[in-house]
Each structure stands twice: as structure tokens, then as C-alpha cells.
Image 1 (cartoon, rainbow, N blue to C red):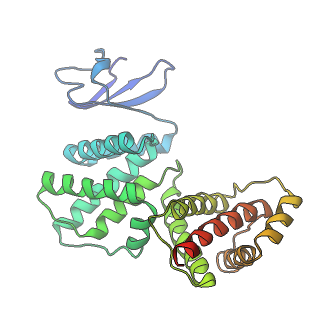
Image 2: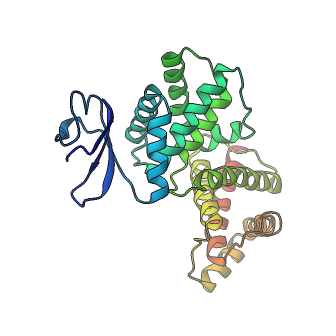
Image 3: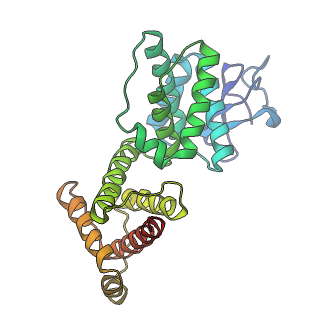
Length: 283
């Protein structure tokens, strides 16, 4: 890869084998180098493929306007998250998270902290991401000599939980978290039980609900119909089915979201499983 522009010692503009414009990051990647020089592939840590004009402008503006130390720390946190969560993040999170980190640091320097109304839910639904977010906060505090309340970790965790490569992905993740919280509350109140949040069935239930809600929020629900299976779960799990109808009513009337029959089948099965385990443990 040949350097087309040097932004600083760690970030350059280049082109990949497909002749696509890319931004390449790596510690010391451009040290004592200039336009036209070859890059040392062993020093490359991250390559951003610039997929559209808007992303191109945002990336370049980010590099030019935000302190290099903040960009480096953002990259470091995301690389740790990718390794820990075994997940590859899109370019979108590098833009959104670096921007978030920049303004978080600016607010902290002015003593301005924003409470997160979803703090409890984020800790429950995204425990791995939240643990990483606490680690990220420590890194920020050590690097910049600042102190943050717990609510800031929840905002970071949401960025790490958002794996949707769309501009409104973060908003969908937040809305999804609110809806999952409400659905769990409906189930708990309907059956009069408290969930064991450490149980495997509860974890499965939360995971299912997260994907279930994201599917209906993005209109990507399962299309196939299975009338036999729908009637089977209705007769086999009547209480769980009735609870499922209550959730369906909430989603359609309060959130104006469509719940297809195919989604109801899996929802009822998960409700029945988690409720059965909760009732066994209460005996």
C-alpha cells in the first residue's frame, strides 16, 4: 500500500488492492514517511474502507478536528472490545464512539455528566459490554486525569452493544433496550415471579428478546408461517401464549410494531422455558 496523505505518525490515507480509498491506522505507521512511500504491513492495526462520500468526510474531519490521543484511545478500546467479544465492528462505531469519547471528555472537563435512565437495564442485558465499558472508563481516567460516574460506562456499553452498521443503529439499540425491559416486566407481572438473572434460561430469554426486538424494529422478522406449530404452542403452553398476546398487544398498541405469527411461536417457547425454571426454583 502506498501513502497518499499523512495525517500524523499513526494515520494515513492510502488505497487497497481494489483501488478503494482507505484510511489506515497503526502506531508509528507513518513515522518519517511521506506521500508516495510504501506502508509496513506489520504496523497496520486497522483499515477503514471509505464506502461513501458522507463517511469519507466524517472520517477525515474526525482525524483533523479531534485530539490524536483521543483517537488512539478510542481505537485501543475498540480493538480490546473486538478481541474480548470476538466481534468485528463496522467503521460506523469508530466514527460514533470516537465522537462520543471526545464529547465525554469535554463534558467531564466542564463537570457536566448526563444520567443514563437505562443504566440498570444495560448492566443486566449487556454484562460483557458493561464490564468492558468500566475498563474503558479506567483507561480514559488514567489517560486524561478525569473521573466519571457509573452512568458514563452505560453509554460506552451501548456503543459496544450496537453492532448495526447504520446511522440510526445506536437509537435502535437504545429503543431495543427499553422494549426488552418492558417485555420482561410484562412477563414478571403476568406470572407473579422474580427472575433469577444468573440462570441460563434467563440469559437465553434476554438474548432472544434482544434479537426479536431488533428484528421487528428493523422490519426483518421471520416471514415463514407455520399454522400447525402456532396452534401447537397455543394449546401446549396456554399461559405463556396468553402472556405472549399481552406482549404483542403492548408492541402493537404502545410501540406501533407488528408481531408476526412466526415470531410469536419462538417468543412463547422462550417465555414458557424461563417461567418453568423460575417456578421450580421458588418451590
